[in-house]
Length: 242
Length: 295
Image 1 (tube, helix red, strand yellow):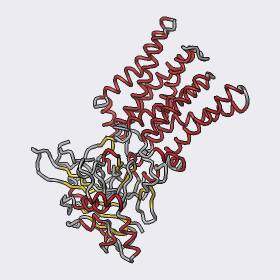
Image 2 (cartoon, chains in turn red, green):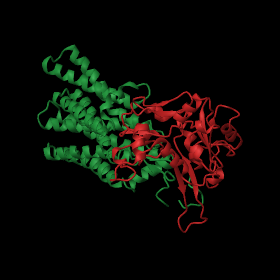
Image 3 (cartoon, one colour):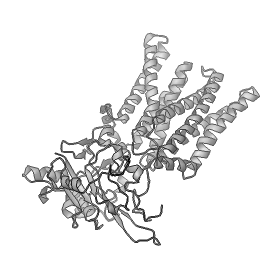
Image 4 (spheres, chains in turn blue, red):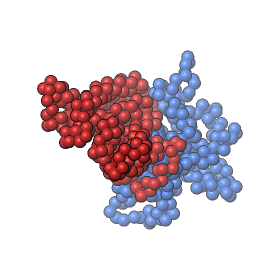
């Protein structure tokens, strides 16, 4: 079993719903965003006026560089492919932040967490978050595919990606259905079908990290064909195609 | 373009150079300097040099690292992942160096010439070599920053460390340490030339590697790191010490002020080399820029 996600770039409407859902789910402090939306717009005098949006989050790499370099074992990979962080073990060296090719890890510095309303004290939501989902200053964090939801859901016999209670919050929230979650190892799962039939691609495969997040619909990426192995003549790396 | 266009272009690494990252930069240099000084002092059998190197590594390097960590009181946890993490290996080198060299210095003071002293010198020397090069391997292991992902980096750090070591040994010789001043000067000058060639070769290789590597090099030549590169690395780090050495050679006499100036310039040069490397480390864009956008 390997949990994975497919992002359909043609469907994302840049509503930031996934970002907000994640913040609520994990009580993320200010300055710490696990999923992010990259939005590319032309200059004001540029044409055509197209906005391309790319939702990104921790790629849950199967050969995760962050797991390899972590000197304390705080970053670990589970059998189901999810890469987690044990903040009780993290020493705050930030090696994982630097080594991540996708820049999807966040260091939670004390200065960054000024609260939602700086100088006004914590809100009730923040107070609840500190009890229910404490984030430690001076450590790193990142998207964990809502593994708490997955574990709790599976314990109840639910299927992640199909039953909402066992599915990551961002996937549940996505009103445009741009995010699909499921088991990449299962041949008949929705995510496997999408990767197979719509030629899903990973970001920067040349690093050999084997991400568990795939993207489909290359037309949104400025007509650059990113799919590996489709260039005639020879294999090109993603970097070359960029 | 707007500010939220994060990683659409090449993005600088900042964690290890901006804000508190400056402490890491200083720690990296202190490790190279301390380790290099120990190895050079070992060659000259200079007790003072070994003592100073121990203090540099234990106090400066250790202190900077301790101050940098987000959770410094958990530092002991770093010890347990040597199988995959260069940071753990480096920590072992540092701890080993401090422990072995401290005991060796005690033996050198009270029981000189014993087999244990020689054995500990060898052990501490090995650890010192590890302290010098491990930061090169730490950076080299970051595949995403193509400017760092080069097998030349540990070699460059080793040469820079030894150069700093020779520089400080020259100062020790000036102030009556048990060191052959001319040999230290000659070593320093030779390493300056080797370093200059190595830096040029490193930059050339990075230029050839890929677009991101080329951008990193151009940032050093013409971009935001250009002052540090041209003034720090080239001017103060290479040209000024070489000029000082040449002046000493032509005049045929030792002028302490000139030598001291040369050594200070070498230290600034060593700091600048690491600063430029860390400051211009670039990640590739996460997604390509759409073709309708201007570059």
